[in-house]
Structure formats: structure tokens, C-alpha cells
Length: 221
Image (tube, rainbow, N blue to C red; front, side, top):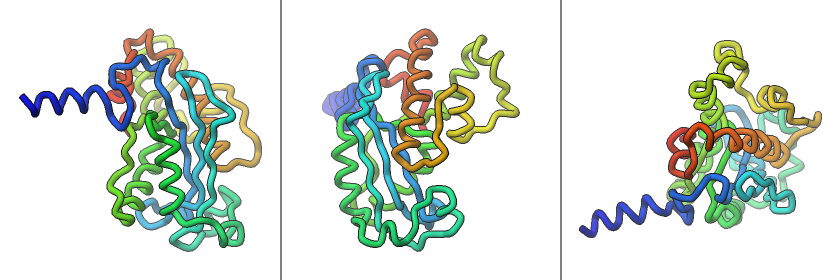
């Protein structure tokens, strides 16, 4: 009996999120990270950006952005992408203290990202190294949401050919008419992802995805 009660409690709430709540009534944190290089198993976080959403509304004044003094050397290939140089982060905080603040910012929210599995893999690795366990919040990947909608909506599927689509964030931004500036960082990428997620949230209830539990079922990173 106690085991059943424990299972019910875990089902009803995960890190402060009600699994039965409607997706339009939930708090989200849309997150992006930049790395020292392209190897998620070895490279480390050099910046983290996040913005809060309340249902489908982006809370423009509630953001998180930190550049991080990385654990590994910045590689030239990644500097070209995000523009963060060694001198930019020489005096920044280390990932240990930044993660503490990030966890507070994400508390009680579903974390959302594009290709979020990559961000989470690095965060999990860093937290394990710091003896902090895994990143605790439930998570949803906009790429997975897009693929599910494509496969389960006739009108959507007729407009999007899965075989020739690019899956990176900026290709999706263009596809969904989301403006992108020439320069970008982790926070700007989080804003773009939040706008992408807005589009998807509007479609999901009509396709039977109405609760957080439904969303996590289709959007697991």
C-alpha cells in the first residue's frame, strides 16, 4: 500500500510540477547552453541562458543568463559559433555556483529546449562531478514535439517533408517565421526556442496532448 501511495505522489508531482495540470497552465523554463567545443562528453559549459514561460506566455522580464569560467579550454570552432572568448570568461564564476542558481530558477517548472538531450547530458555530467545527482526537473524537447505533431497531424504533415528538413534551431525559426538576429547567445537562443514552443502549445490540445504527463510522453529528450 505504501508503495502505491509513493507511486501516486511521484505521478502527481515531479520536482514541483503537477503531472495532471493542463499544459497551458504550467510554468516552463526554456533553456540553452553554449559549450567550449562540440564534444558533449568532454567539453564544458561556457554560458547558460533561460527564460520563463507561464503556459504559452513568455515572461520577457524573467530571464537567466550567466557566462561560466569553463572547466576545459575553449576551442576555436565553438568560439566562431557563440563568440565567447577566453578573456570573456576568465573572471566568471565556475559551473558549480552557476548550477545552484540555475536550479533555483528552474524550480517548479518543466524545462524546455531544442535538442535538449545535449544540454542535459552536459548538465548531468557536471552535476555528477559535483556530487549533485541529476538535473531534477521534468524536461521536454521542442524537436521531439515537432516530430510528434508532424506524425500525428495530417495538415501539418502535408506541409513538412521529414526527409529534407533541417533540424537545427535556426532552420526551425525560419520555418515558423521567428525573427533571428545575426548575433546570438544562449539567452537569445532560449527566446527563439520559447517562441517555437509557443507555436506547438497552440496545436497540442487539439491533438489530445492536454496535460503535463501527455507532453512529457511525446517530448522526452
